[in-house]
Every structure is written in structure tokens, then in C-alpha cells.
Length: 474
Ligand code: GLU
Image (cartoon, rainbow, N blue to C red; front, side, top):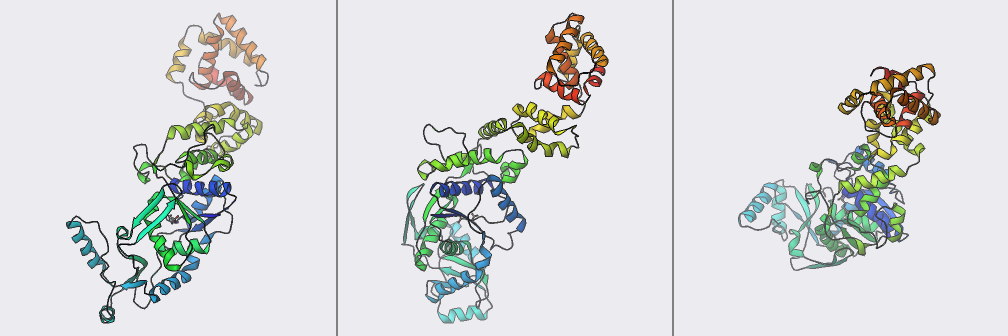
């Protein structure tokens, strides 16, 4: 059992491609088969090395490692050309000299008559004189493969069941190679190349998005022409945006590196992507690891209907995963954010304590930026903080607290000591403990929202930043 992902390096790793990769990977792991990677880089104008790198990095980040050496389609271009020559020699393919202008006119006529655009097979049976005269006129040509209108193409799709296509619905004789002079073969095109490469790599199952259904029908006629064994096909549903339309660049974030840069974790992405089109067996939790999913993955539970992208679910999964992390791991993950802001840590243990403190309030890793800021930059007083400090007794209580701290600073270590200081100051100012606590929070952090007060204060006390913040409010 061998499957493959065959991305074109014409853009960053798209979430749709990554989801296809994941389904291939899950199926391969489930069947104890191989998951292979082939970069389809024959479109020289649009392919870029930086996109190949982005795709490889993205797959590795997601943990979707491939089993054999990476294949680059462009390495096999000569054998692709040879295969086209074989089809020409057998009379299964022919050269078509129609110009772009002629084809355009043909399509316009079809449109005016309310017909779907298709090549009308006009050069299928040129005589050698006709061919000669086109060549003399200096016309270039493409190679086309004959598709009979009445041919029936069938396969059993693992997701969609029995599929039947008519040759007539494939847009006329199929182009196999780009335009070239008549004594050459232009660069071979996707449908031909993919068949040859999949066969060469001994791919047993082709798993890809349902936007490739018509390609599958075209590829099956080529399998037949070459006498190659057909793989089994599975076409996965499209990913739709929140309005139910195909997710596109206009929807903003669509590439895996964008999700990574926003602070999503690879585990949450893999978990969430598996749910885009696949449903877990009864009794299984919707939060799982890729290995857990691989144990039970099959195509019976892959839906035909498009899968709507649900940010709330992704966020929920991401938060769950972050909240499970050990503080040391969390600290490692947020460290780049602290570094980028030039925020200095007194020591690693302090950073780990910070990570532990803010961890429960993070949905994405990047939330650590705003959650950490008040520990490094003196915050402005927000409206609720200001109002708190205006309450009767608030400033008096803080004044008493500050006096005690100036006499005997708290090093942030023993929490009972801090509790004692708060109790004594509240008593002396004749205010409730709640009032001094809220007022202290306002003074230290500028607002009333935030994680546990004593732990937060402790972090500031450990770097000697608490007294100056209280002082500025008095
Ligand atoms: N290069 C094609 C794509 O990126 C591959 C499709 C396939 O899996 O055959 O859509």
C-alpha cells in the first residue's frame, strides 16, 4: 500500500493540500503502508524553490513525515516525453496545429450557442498534406490524446462510491504537452505526467481533493492507453469558508505557515484538519493525536459534503493543547515572543513561572505577547483600574502596604508573607481584604482583569518592580 502527496510548488502549503497530506498519512499509517512525497515542479514559470521549502517545512512541522526520498517531477521529464512519442507512434495521440486565436473563436462560438466550451477535435484526422502546409506556415502545435465521446470511464471511489464519466464530458481530445515546433514535444502536462509518475512510484491509492474528479477520468483513459494498472482513488471533500464557499486566498489565512505564525500548534492543526471531512468513530473524543487517529482512520467515515471551516473549534482545540503543556515547554514556545520584544528575564525559572501563570489564558501562543507585556512594561491605568483606586480607603491601604514593603521588601518567594502584609495593611486602613487586593492589582497592572494576583505580584516582586508601580498611584 503506497500513497503520495503531489503538491505543485506554486504557492505556500495550503490548508487544503495539508489536509490531503494528512488523510494520505493517516491511511498509510493505518494500513502500515508508505506515504511518499513528489514535488510537481514541471510548470517552470510558476514553480519556485521557496515554495518547495515552505511545503516541506510545513509538512515536517505538522509531523507528516514521508517515507522515501523526495521525488521531483522535473527529474523525469525525458521519460515523460518518450511516453508521449509512444502514444504518437501508436496513433493514440496526434499533433494539433490550431492557433490560440482559432481556439478562442471556437470557444466564443460555443458560448454564443449556449454550449459548454470544448475542443472540437478539428485536427484529429489531418491528412499529411494538411499537416505539411501548417508546418510550412510555421505553425506550432500541441500533442492531443484521443478521447472517444462514447467512452465510459468508471471507478469505485473510496469516498464517493461508483463514479461514471462519459468521454464526451472531458472537453474534447486532451492536451498532453505544451505548444512547441512540430519537430519537438513541448513540456508534458499534468494529467500525463501524474499517471506516469504514480505508476513509476507504484502508487496503490490516489487520495486527493474532489476538484480532481475530471482529472481522474482523464487519467484513467491514459492508464488504459499505457496498459498500466490503475490505482484506487479516493476524492476528499473541499474545505469551505464560513459562508459555505470554497476556501480561497480571499479568506485571509489559508497557508499552514500563516497558522503557525498566528500561534497555532501543529498538534491542534493536525487534529482540526482531520475533522475537516472525517468524523471520529462513536465513542472517540474529538480531541486526539495524529497517531490515535491513524489507528482508526478509514474512508467509510470521510464525508462527501464539503467541510466548513470552524475557527471556534480550531481555537478550542489549540487552547486545550496549550493548557496541557508543561510550563517548561510553554516557556520554550513563548520565548521567541519575549526575545523579539527585547524583554529581559532575570532567570529562566522566572520565565517558566510567567509561562505557568499566563498559560491558562492563552488560546494561541501569540496571546502570550499581550499577556506578558504588563510584566515587562509599566502599564497605563485603564478606566476600571482608575476607578478602583478612587474608592474610599484604596490609596490609604496601598500607602500602608508600600510603607511595610519599603521597610522590609518582599522578595516574591513566600506567599504567606505577602498575605500577611495585605492583611495587616487592610486592617490598618480599615478596609476589606478584597478592596486592597483589587487596588493592588490596579496599581501593579493598571486593570482589574488578570491571572492570580499573588503569583503575578510575586513575579514583579522578584524583579523589584512592585514598589515603584504602587508608588506611582499614590
Ligand atoms: N499537483 C497537483 C495539485 O497540487 C496534484 C494533484 C494530484 O494529487 O494528483 O493539485
